[in-house]
Image (cartoon, rainbow, N blue to C red; front, side, top):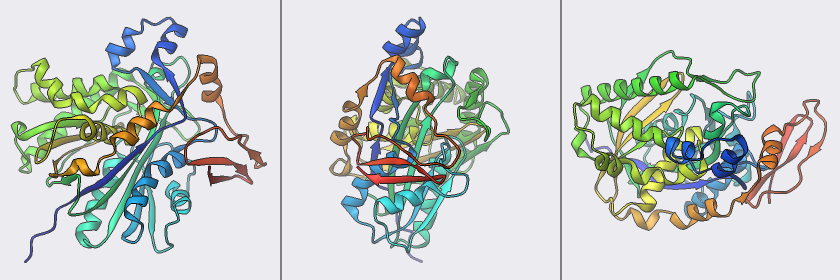
Length: 391
């Protein structure tokens, strides 16, 4: 029997919002020492959606360069992972399917499990490609992180989307077996259907995250995974960048290793750059870390990356991926840097207005003024229907 082909991430593209609020502005407004943000949680700014931006517009903006490079002929499935869904029934990916001109012979589905959903999408995609290596799967993780004004989680807000093309003989990262799994029923973070903002128990969330690090790593090693020393870098889910530091230190302690600051920095340092400027993007967060690592680290060809994906509530997975030689020819550092740099800074009052913006729920016609400079926008609501258009 012929060996199964390598399957993994063939292309990756990220997008964020039109607006940005710096943590210097937030700190000056609420009287917090800015060091609490810059050093304490590792954040310098948060992306803030314009009124005509949401998970769909970011997702389409992230996916468009992938489609432009590879076309749609081999993409038979679109998986959209989010916990910021715009509809209780219809998959947000169907809007992306329409905006990007995909053929009707396409499967589209939406996945949810807090911040873990993007990894669920990736692993489902890997399985589909193993079943039929001629096909490719577009996996999109897109989220807007939103907490109530004045709550502790407010400083960790953000918004971004990452689109990944999954296929055989990938150009970026080969996804490996096995995976280590962990699930526990924990109420560390949740958002009931009747709320527009999430609820979080900060101390419980950190504890649950670290418990999941242990559990998923234990399962990974028991299933014959790689030894700790075989990894050249680690990508962790980043509700805030300092959490990656906490998680890696915890893993080293759990494995009985000495915790050396330089060792930790070498393992995760290149993964936090984009998240520090964008904030938490839930399902997209770990993959923004991967984008930053591939875009900014020294040559990683042939090196293995450890991935720890965590979603509150809670589900976690640890898996490995090996970077493909020649990957740098397929990365998008200039595009990603431009997406971050072109955001328009807002003052705190404007941020509050954007944060509190909500559509009426009476089914009327509510056009949205054009604000975003991104390629796609939410044009408005009409008859309870969201209307999207190219900008």
